[in-house]
Amino acid sequence: MTTSIKKSNYDVIITGAGLSGLIAAKYLSQMGKKVLVLEARDTAGGNLRNLSTKGFSFRTTLEFVPDYKEYIEPIERLEQLLQLKILGPPKDITPKTFKSSELREFLGFGDLKFQSLDEIQWYTQTKIRELLISPEKWVETLLTHADFECLTLHEVTRYNFTDGRFDSITVNGSKVLHADQFIHTAPVSLLNTLIPDEAIKPKDRTRLAKTQGWTSVCLHLLHRGIVSNEDCLHILMGSNTDFEPCLGRFFTPTQFNGETVQESQWMSLMNDEHAEDMEFLGATLRNIKKQIKRVYDSAVENVLIEKIVVTLQSQGFMDLKFKNPLQLNGVENFWLASPLILEQRGVGASVQAADQVIAAMMELSSLTERAKHPIEASELINSEDPELTL
Image (spheres, rainbow, N blue to C red):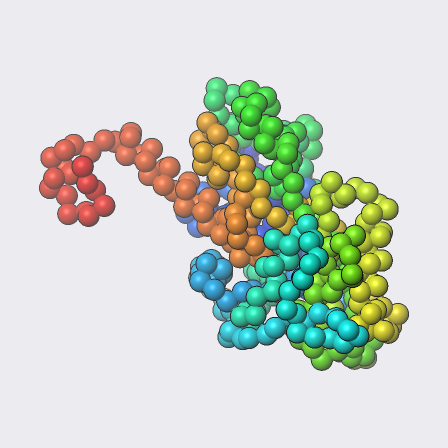
């Protein structure tokens, strides 16, 4: 979705048109705010952007939603925002792995000490919720009839800082856009190059420089015919820790161009430091295919369409140790809405990140208004509002 900028001044500018950014924009626009969302890529959606290839639309995620309160509640709030029923019924389904020449119930990693264990453990839960609407459809709904502007191919190249506040951003190296508030949902690591020295304390910059997440390497396959009737998550790994485990699943068979096909998605993680190492990336992809082939001998050869997606900082937890994890220290109008600063994981973390930032912005706005219009003690005493106390 690309529209023209009508004016140069906004209430809020959001960097990144991923799920967090679009949800925040939807909430803010419903409050009457003038909002602009900027996306460096050619399509909105972030990790959930449309993955259509040769006429087939691949699912963007493994669609893994654990069934527990802290994860389900944010998605229930998203259902209210979108006026859609997203969550299906709960079900018990145990992940499987390949061991002793057969597919077995996954019981753990044994003595193998993978670096990404904290991330992979997330996918070993057995109580999950089905999704009635896939996450990429959430993005489409957020963009349909949006009351905010969303511009693609607009890369933020600088946050401009004046008199203790951010007052504007520079886009594509030249265009300057002004706003009262700024929300950053793009990779946290970009902040070190986007924020001027006077806006951040040296120790905070050092913390940002040390932040590392996990880069996901996803292999999307469209198989001819039906490869497997297993609908569980597969956790596949070799006998050593040279590569992180491979996660994947098969989806329900469908018809495409007159023939029966089955979609599968596979993911492995690698440290962000390897993100630009093409040799290591190639080796990781070969290992994914090797693990699939061990279980399903012909699955890799009998492929109609193959798509590779590499996403920097798609997962992980970054403890920036800021006084308020949602804000840059000492700056009231710059907010962080990255799921990587939460201990939550998956799409639920993206929803929660947007929720928390909007709640914090509203609280700060309320406090600011009260400071501008102080209530007299007599008014407090006579007030029937239980929220107003001395």
